[in-house]
Picture 1 (cartoon, one colour):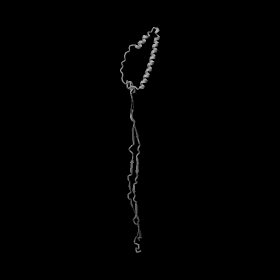
Picture 2: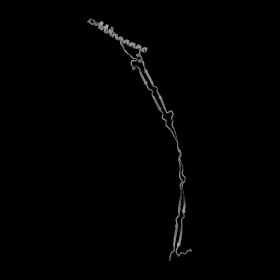
Picture 3: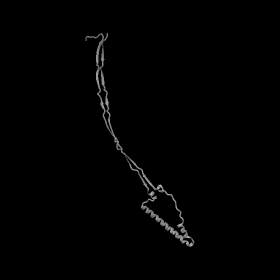
Picture 4: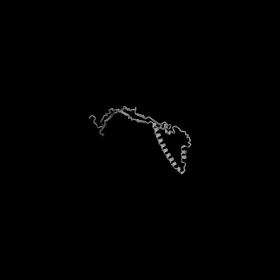
Length: 193
């Protein structure tokens, strides 16, 4: 005898996922940049004048072109010196005359010194006698610079980026339904039941 068999057929349920992932958009705008810097009147230049001083007083004095005060002063000094020389010469001649008693011929010697033959002096002179008599003083000009510092003014206007993020979606659906089926097989089964 053959026994009846019960066969069970089962199908499991399956779920499906549908994911929608749209792309994200980022749009960046350029920033506004403004730079401002002063370029005028930054440099100041000043100069002092050059000076040339020429003093020809001594050169003119060599040519006997002197002020009256200087003439008077030089005449006074010359007279004083000649007076002192005359006093010294007279004292020397007096000393010579004191020695007459010793047999010295002082009068002839003094006359020869004072009135002897004189030789004319010849001399070549230049006016002025040297270039050192002309005093030259030169002051060069000076250049002064003043540069002002000019900092740039930088202004930045920032722009935020435009970001678009669409919503992601996931749809869940049943791809296959679950099912169960029974089947009886064999000869001793009453199928009418």
